[in-house]
Image (cartoon, rainbow, N blue to C red; front, side, top):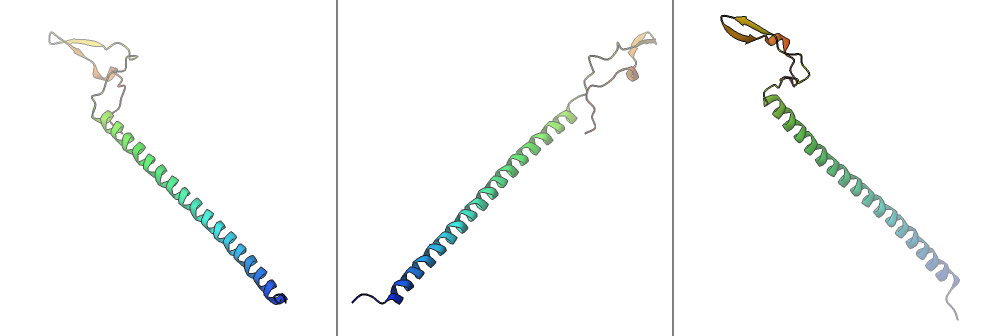
Length: 101
């Protein structure tokens, strides 16, 4: 005699349920891995932006600390004779870099 019909259908039902759960587990696992990947990428992007901001601050502070240079395109400096010595006229000079950030 064979097994009762109810046993076979119950076994098939359990196998189907296991397949559904394993599929659901696979979906959850892939979703979790995707979320971890996105968070990892966001962390790397945040680190990269931090490096860029650090470099930007360094460049700005170096420019602010550097002495101002004259713009080579500026017109010739006016010379005024006074007290027997030549003096330059500062208002006629344009600066290439400003000291204000």
